[in-house]
Amino acid sequence: MTLFPILSLGCLSDLGHQAPTTYSLSTPSGATLVWDSAYNNVDDGLGALVPIDVAVLNANGEPAPSIRVEFIVGSNGIYLLPEAAIQEVDPPDPQAAGSNCTPGAEDYDIETCAWYDSATERYFELSTSYTGEYKPNYALSATDEFGTLRMWVYVDALGESEGGGGSFQEASVTVSLGFPDGASSFSITAGS
Image (cartoon, rainbow, N blue to C red; front, side, top):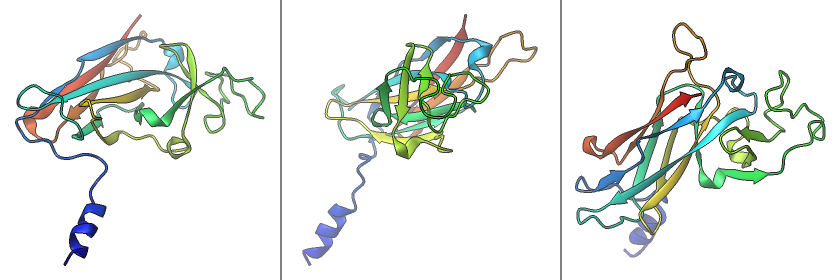
């Protein structure tokens, strides 16, 4: 008889609990990037890391820890990365890895080289579970003990607007607690 509760506890998700419909979500409305056509190639090592800081509040307006939050990308060329996946590194020696590690180079090797964040002018690497062909457009995570959560969006490329001319389409990420009134949209726009 006591074995069943122990097994049930072992099966609990580490991704938090479903929020009651009385909980609310607080997210910024979006970010504007200084963006250029030179950054707009996929897998070239050039892009921008954008944080989405989320807070979940209970019905009394207090922080709600261990609440599941869902992120869905609505655009190609945009990837979701949890905080633990990103590590800042020193600028690479362009030839040290035996590959071309110059961000933006035509033969840039995304597998062995650091990525460049044009927004902060820093280099970063991803943990091994986020390298290769893994480019997540969906993520589940949970709020910390303070009812907050940070998810990173890596903008590798933005859709170009009709007519081109260096104009880009707005990208979006839906942040949700799993019910209709518990969702908001985070937009990413390109400025000059």
